[in-house]
Image 1 (tube, rainbow, N blue to C red):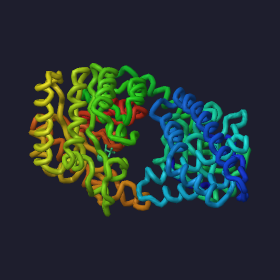
Image 2: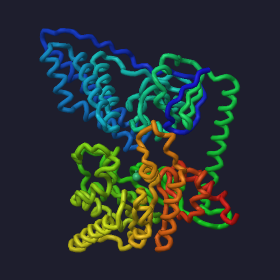
Image 3: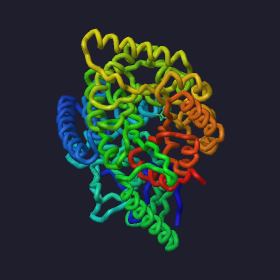
Image 4: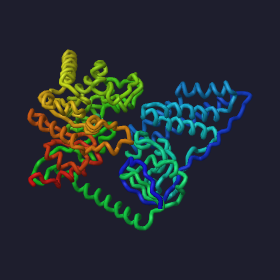
Length: 544
Ligand code: PEP
Ligand code: MG
């Protein structure tokens, strides 16, 4: 029995046989050619075939994992047509008189290396994409498939890494878990695994690859990130029991649908859901959330190669509001910067991006961009119950500046006879210690606070939320954080505002009672956690 420790990407447990995912080796040799024209023609033909395959994969992904997740294959199609990539390949074929397959393979390595060396974790994750499209083109030249299908029984797929197209091409009904030696939780593969509700572990390391073998029995624990190879009977029994308990828990949670979020002693709270795209609204409704407590609007910007227009944004916000009406939808304005970057913003490289031009600071520095979003939000407000919240607030003057821009937008809409709702709730995120400490001054200005515990933890404890090496110093239950939340709750209520929590801590049921005792009015969590939190609320008795 051997144990490997990685990082759990989707929490669930799988017990079963291993299938090692091997790409069919595409041998790429350097061959000198006299005439480069046929090689260039081969390249074009292979690219066409690759794009046709990607179209099919896109259709499959669209059905299985939704539009937002399928979009990566549209990006792959665009990458195949990318000028820099194509120029590098054709220049190599012409300049060095080599075969097309070799030029593609070398270009793939160069581009992947370039992406990997970038600071931005999103760009680093693109290294897998460029390798993926290049392998596909080479396979098309060789007339072979670039990966193999899974065997008949359900298996735990083990791989060095999985490209997004490989992940989605696997038959979902035959995959019990994804386990990889490399990968990052930011990669599209990890995101796809989460959306497929399949237990997934990444980052198990090189050694795991040398020891894993087809047909071996393994336990993949997506909660702890542990993979146990050749488990003994005791471990197997333990995990089978864990699986049984998990499925019983799920069934029990199902029974909570339609029930109220009320404590034993009768206190009612709101349990809302966090989303990053309108594609997640289905999950919000299925899990019976009371509304959307955090719509991370920056994902609209991150998915695009240029600023989303007012019209594009308006349509998305309108759809979110209409789909959820009469329930409330709180849309957070653009929180770009730090780990969330889009090239077209042309942001300077910063020494400490988490402390840099991020979120509201960027919006207030570039009001022309901010106002496009505000106009889209105001216009959409007539289609449902809208709340707008502003991220990364640290001062009263920021809120004054925001409200002045909102007033300008309303004036412009009035001048053009464009309708908007008079009942939009305006709130701010409490995710900096500064905001919590001056919450007595901020509360009279707004309708609500929403505590972003992810950033509040990072900024209070001086712990970079992107750095796994300091995990043990990053105590999310730290008394300093709980005191800041409590102080914010007191100040909100003293000034007629309500307060919710939308950071990951909202789903930590070991704190549900603590939050309720502080007077927190709403908890906003991933759709999959709504019923778990409802269960915890219904078991809490505040009279004791
Ligand atoms: C937070 O910081 O807790 C939060 C909800 O915002 P994000 O995770 O998007 O920064
Ligand atoms: Mg935040």
